[in-house]
Each structure stands twice: as structure tokens, then as C-alpha cells.
Amino acid sequence: MCTVHKFYRANRPDRGRPEEGDRMKRIVLLVLAISTAAFFASCGASSGSRKGETETGVTSSPASTAEPETESPDVTEEPAPTATPAARKLVNAVSEKTVTADYSEKSETVGDPAAIVDGDETTRWSGFDLGRPNWAKNLHHEITIDLGGRYELRDFYIIWETLTGFYSIQVCEDGTDWTTVYEYDDVMMKATPLIDEGVFPKATFATMIRIVTGFPEGEKCEQYPYCSIYEFEAYGYEADAE
Ligand SMILES: [Ca+2]
Image 1 (cartoon, rainbow, N blue to C red):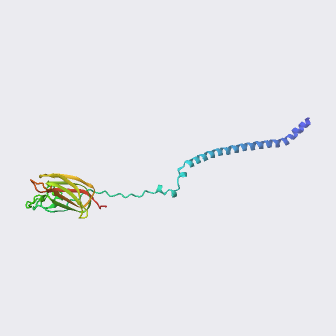
Image 2 (cartoon, protein in one colour; image 1 turned 60 degrees about the vertical axis):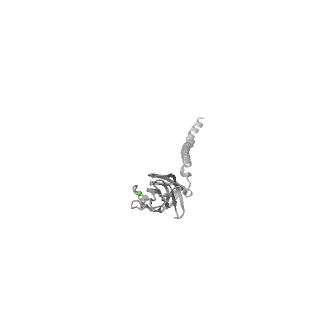
Image 3 (cartoon, protein in one colour; image 1 turned 90 degrees about the vertical axis):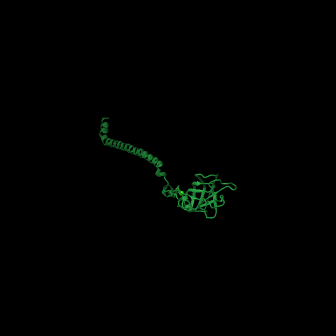
């Protein structure tokens, strides 16, 4: 027994050492395997997390969803410049323009029709004529203003020294066809300083303006058988201005 035991004990180191070495190798390999597995598990978990974040970022990133620049030129193109029309300036279209009258009083002070557009409210034109046998005709006159261009007229202002009867304002574009754009039919039967003003119809275009005075047929003028104007102004825009 003892021999066997001794034999066993005597041979055990030779047999036992290898067994212990294998055990140690297995332990070492196991430890290495566990360590390696833990390492890759940790790397896998970390990389998975970053991947998830990246995908999430990619999914929500504007860059990943933006259309290719070549496919959306309208987004980046500057809008086409819009032409801004030049502001039009309202002017007195008759100021110091050429004025003619069918008749003017024979006087150095009131015989010039241009006095109605000279900007001076103390100078005037008069159609008074004591030599006319028919006083009614003395109240019918035409005073014409050449605008020297085409205007879109808006409104007017006139100061009469005397208006006996009624008057109208007419406009013309071609020098031939006249259109009445304002009528004053509140017949005045006496001399009066009269300031009148009015607005022309929409789209009143003219190269010439005419003031026409008249008196009702059959009526008799008892006093002041004439018409006289201090000042006339007609405001508008140059129709062909840029
Ligand atoms: Ca004047």
C-alpha cells in the first residue's frame, strides 16, 4: 500500500505537474477569454451607442436631407430685380404756357391772356369790349392754353375777377377733338370775385386746355357784361415722362 502510495506520490509530481500545468493553462486561457470577451463586449456596446447616435444624427441632420444643390437652384438664386417706377411729380401744367383768347380787352394792363398763368394773382385777362353791339356775345369767350406736352390732369384752381354767366373747361389731345371735363352751371348774374376749383374725371389726358364762357340764351345781363380771370392753375403729371 505504502509502496503504491509512495509510487503514486513518487510519480505524481511527474504526472501531477503536467496536470497542474494544463489546469493553469486552462485558467489562463479562460481568464484571457473572459477578458477578451469583456473587452469586445465593452467595445461593442460603446460602438453601438455611437452608431446609434450617429444614425440618429444622420437621420436628423439637415445635411443628410438637403436636396443636392444642383436640384434646387431656386432656393439659392437671388430674386430677379423688380423695376421701380420713377415717382411722378405733380406739376402745374399751365404755368407760364402759351395762352390765346378769341378776344381781349384793348388795354395794356388786362389785354394779355398770358396773365392768367403768370402766377401773379393781381394781374388778369379781361374780355370786356364796350364796342360790341351785342352784350350777350361779350360774355362768350374761348381762352386756350397750349401745354407744350401731354399731361394727365387731376384738378384745377381758378380765380375770376368777373364771371357773368357760366363756364366750362375742355381738353384736347390731338388739336381737333375737344372734350368737356368740367362745367360750372351756377349762372352768375353779377360781378363777383369767384374762386372755383374742381377735380377732373379719371384719365383726363390733354395737350391743350380751353376755358369757355357763356351766358343763357334769352337772359339779359343787367350789369358787368364781361368776364375776367386773375389766375388759372391745372395740376397733373407729364403723361410721357419716364
Ligand atoms: Ca395772373
